[in-house]
Length: 530
Image (tube, rainbow, N blue to C red; front, side):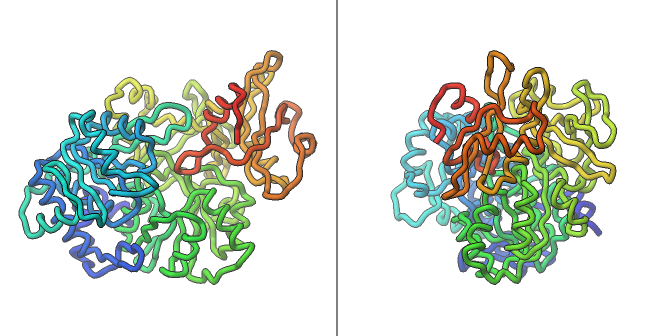
């Protein structure tokens, strides 16, 4: 039976309890030299749930988790699920103002955080924030320091010990209740709090695991952002449902990830394009024996077919690509290992189980195959809505209940989805629509180009001019004129860059997406880009 059918009406707490009961000794989490079994995670999550319940945390309360990938993140998540609480996973690298905004907006009653990390004293940071956050009653810290705390600040291990063997009232939550409030990465505007139910996350997790063939023998590596839906659903929950184990990495750099593949015998490698680009560069310098790997899954940002080819060559694996959004609980579509190579290189596959995708005109009229339009999605992974934003929620759906992704794409005659770009990213040059991805694909093929992003800038004559922001290959010598001539060989005149800027790096979100809004702002202001 497919996982999407087996766990159809489960909550996250019942999914863990079921897996821990049927296979308690199975390895689930791998962290450094530690291996945590399903039975151990279930038992410790019960203890933490009892401790949180004793503090007064109950169904519906928000529990913020401000942690890197570590066992405490997972235990906090499952403990909240057992109480019917809502988790708010937040990036530990947020600025103080961003963290304050999300904690206040989510009305978090409790936060779990590291004591020290990223050069930040989080205990001190939260001591300053708590007086400004009236809803935040408790802080739970993860660390080895023997510090004195007041009656609102507790150490994680102390609470685990205090909750061991204690009873608590288990949640009677159902699958369609909100479980997670995940904030969007905000590539083109202010972040929104996306409400995701148990069913949303489990359906995305099961659908992804079924599509790529995850099983009990698999060991997953490369999930470095548990605060993101891909880390929550295909990462943590996909591993849980399929019986696979997952490597939690505190260091997500390319070298450390390659070390982890060898150390843990990883079989499936998740990652964003920038991670794989860095790994390929290292492997070109020094090949490694990565014989345990069978599959690499690329998601989070558009990927060029040259990278897919390079990954297959240097990692020695099949490569599949996925299309994921926060509002869809991560995966919308993914290519399968059994798909033809050209489909795995040039598309983002076909929808996962029970997910429906259509491509439409701006007025919602369905388009025929091979036509570019807006991608809209419907299925069990679609969000409940944007927290405290009913107007934005209403505008996010069409009359048929499909989520308006704002992404441009096409469905080919074989049913495979192709990504073209964002509707808002379209450059209107002299009245013609120019899709940045088409320009970028040509420029990326130049041997001196490492990365590129094409954005529109105001122009008195053209309306918008095309600016290609290029990160050159280290040591390469290339000019803007050469790039323009390179584009002229294959692109129509309307799509040739009007301006070429060379920069040190592209501004990105934590999931690897280019922050085009930042590029446009810097170009408009005349500020230095690097």
